[in-house]
Every structure is written in structure tokens, then in C-alpha cells.
Length: 190
Image 1 (spheres, rainbow, N blue to C red):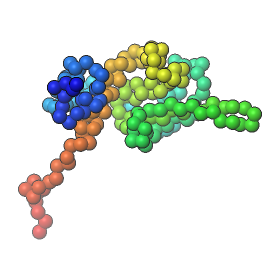
Image 2: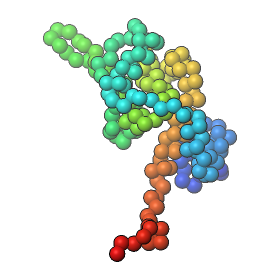
Image 3: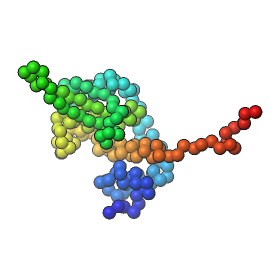
Image 4: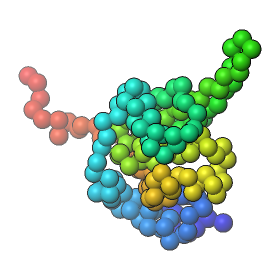
């Protein structure tokens, strides 16, 4: 049963399914009033400088070294432009075994959706923490979320805020672009 106070466009229902109706109503109210972008800008004023795959690798490696020293090495970390579209994911952690002669080698990769190049710093950290936690815990279980909270104490709030951020991105992308009219285009050419 859907809540009667969800937006007609269904953004709140899609992004916040499973959250208490009061939170959905608040988010829906911010969206309906056009104040969601302002709320997010006030909540996350800090941007990050992680724009390249090399910078992302260094960023992830620093967090891994701080919290998961004994975890296996990462072979690749990078932004992936196709990730959100093809896999409906914001980040992935993959493990593959490769045969090299008589040995089996584990190859670990973390890919982060390109939208995080321009996301607030705290949201990038949250998604990286999520993918790093998969080095130890493959499933989204209690131990997984405890590890996420160990690396980022505000993990659950950031996950909720990330959903609001995605909701705002989709809403902004769906807004029609205003076309200039003859009256507002300025002086006409001779």
C-alpha cells in the first residue's frame, strides 16, 4: 500500500522505499517545495578533488590502509560511466580468480559510478566505505553494516542523504529546459 503523501512523480517512493512514512513525507515535502537542492547544499557544502581514477585509487587505498590493513590488495579502482545505467548500482566490488601457471590469483576491483565525481565529499566516502566493506563481508548482513559504521560512524544517515541526492539529481534531470521566447531573448538582429 502506498502512502497518500507521496509525490505524484513517485521519486520519494522509489528512492525511500522501506523508510518510515514520516521521513518519506518530509523528503517529499522538500521536493514538492523545490527546497531539496538547498537542503543538500547546506548539509554538504564540501566538495572533493577526486576527479581521476588515479586520485580515486589513492583515496580508496588510504581508507583501506587505515581500516582494512589485512584485507587483500586491490588491483583496480576507478570511476565507471556505465555502472548506474547497466547494473543499477552506484558502486561494485568484484572478485575474480585468475589462473597463472599452477597458481590461482585473486583479482579485486572496485568501480564507482561517475556521478560521484561531482557528488559531495561525504557521499563519495560513504560509497567507498560500502565497497571496501565488501572486502571482508560479501553479503549485506549485520557484520557488513557494523564494518561500514566502524569506517564511517554516520553511515546510515549518509546512505539516506545519498538517496535524497539521487532523488534530486533525477528531479533536476526531468525538469524541462526553459526556451527563450521572442520577448525575453533580448534585442533582435537587424
